[in-house]
Length: 375
Image (cartoon, rainbow, N blue to C red; front, side, top):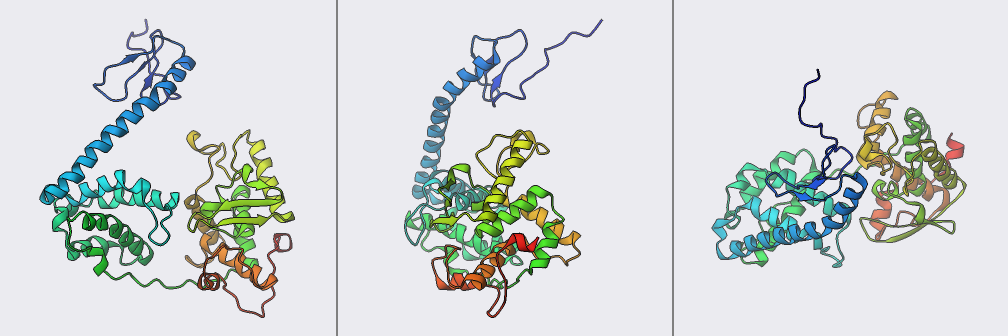
């Protein structure tokens, strides 16, 4: 005789906090100890619908309560600077001020990518840093910040990025009268060596030829559009209009229109056909397939994912580590465009200095941005 026990939980396809057990009414319980909300239905579809109606109201109340608590912490920090620690202040700044943070230069909202980076950096690096959990925000000194940043001395790009982040949230402490001066303003940025690598056509073809076809086509799209991976990999069908690819550069906010030539159209159509072969319906062109985790299927692939695949192919092609990276694809494309067509601003750069930065070859050099010829 089989052993009797509690019904097995079958909630893998349900949102967080919604539970449906065989033979029982579905209920909502967002956290342990919260009184259960009986939905008075055993139908999972109906329970999901009721949950969707209930969620916005609950979430708004939760966020309002969280914001009030954090705001009270900041007010308390002004009145009693010794009472709130650096990590607590950073957390409060992240949740209250970061969502509406503006660029220093033009007062426009920072990009979604930068906001996500800042949020992640504060949660993973700033808040857990042990000295910051004990040092009062009012007692933060330059030496404390230097010790925190020292772990990234060997990675000047990230060092400077973290320094910029610290400068932003510490400036709020200055503006609120908690700090007299911003400690970050007394720390010099690290010098970043300019990368001047140019990837020859043969090397590009040999590397992408070792990648999975979908990943190689994603690299081709980066090559042809010639923009930052985070902008290209998130392209949607609705952004292809009247023979143009239209998008806004995440880093600069510049609106771009790239003319769709035969090669771009062939690449986009291949990606459409690949999605259809996977039975994937998604507005994005470059997406994770059925060999990925369920929650990723149909979502745009990340820059980090494609960068790893590109680096693996570089090694397989017997190039030394660091010879080429995914970030070399865009400079190659813009260099080839410049040599083939002369002056243009396909890269959407605001300054001549940045235009020159992405040109890795000098005339005379015969090249053409043509994947058909390369392959």
